[in-house]
Image (cartoon, rainbow, N blue to C red; front, side):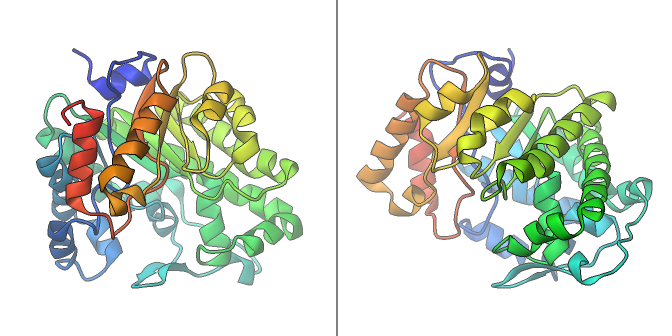
Amino acid sequence: MTKPLLRVLEGSVLERPPIWIMRQAGRYLPEYRELRSRAKNFLDFCYAPALATEAVMQPLRRFPLDAAILFSDILVVPDALGRSVSFVEGEGPKLDPLIEEGAWRFGDVEKSLQRLAPVYETVERIKSQLPKETALIGFAGAPWTVATYMLQGEGGEKDRARRAAYHRPGDVDALLAVLVEATARHLAEQVKAGAECVQIFESWAEGLPPALFERLVLKPTEALIARLASLGASVPVIAFPRGCGGYLKLYTERVKAQAIGIDTGTDPAFASAAARPGQALQGNLDPQLLVAGGEALRRGAEAVIEGFRGRPHIFNLGHGITPEAKPEHLAALVDLVKGRA
C-alpha cells in the first residue's frame, strides 16, 4: 500500500491526516543536543552522513511520524557554490554579503554537486533505515530565500536584499538563475538517492510588492520546478511560501506543486479557497502550542484537523518546531492526530 503521506500528495483524502513536523530533528530533543556536540560546527554536522542520518532517525524512534525529512540546511547550496557560510551560535547563519561586492562570482554548478555528495549519501543511508510506511522528504530553499541570505549575509530584516533587487536588477536576476539551476540539480540528486518527494522552503515570501513577488518568488520557483522535472525527478513537490498572505491564490495557480505548505497566520478556509481542486495542503499548527501543551494544544490541533477536513491534508506546524517545545507535547499531538488520544 502507498505510504499515507504519498497518498495525500496524490490527492487522496484520508480519515486521519498523515503527520510530520518541520525541524522534527532538532534542539528540543536532548539526544539531538548530545549528537550535535560531536561536530565542531553546524556545516560539518550537515556534511557528516552518519551524524545527519542519526539526527533524522531520532524523532522517528520516539514518535510514529509519517515522514522523515533529510537533515541538512538550505545554505549548503551557496556553500557548495563557493560562498563563505558559517553558523554563529545565538546569531544564526553568516555569509559574505554580495551587496558589498562589485562583481559576483560563483563556483561551477557541476562542481557544487561534488561538494554536496555527503548530503546524497545521507539520503541513501536514511532510506535504508526507514520503516516501510515512512516517506522520505528531500528539501532545498527557494531561490529568493537563499538569495536573500547571500545578498545581505544574514537573515533578519530583508530590506537590504530588496533594495538590491532594485539597484542591481541584472545581477539579482542572474543570481536567481544560478540558484534555480543549482537547486534543481541538488534536489534531483536527492531524488536519485531515494527522496520520494521534496519540499521547497520559501521562508522569506512576505513583504514584497506585487512586481517583486512576481519576479523574485513566482518566476524562479516556476523555473525551479520545471527544471527539476526536466532532470527526470518526477516526484511530488511541497512548496511552502511562508508569509505570502494575499498572494496565496496566485501562488497556487502559478507554482505547480502537489501540495502547498500553509503558515500559522493563514486561515484554513482561506487556504482551501486559494488551493487548486484536489491540491493537498500542509500545516498549520502554531509551534508555540508544542511549548504550551495541555488543553490549548488539544484545541489547536483539533481546529487544524477540522479546518482542513474534506480535502487532502498533511498535518504539520505553520513553521518549524522551536527548541523550547517539549517532547511529551509532540508525543501527545501525534497521538491526537492519529486518533489514539
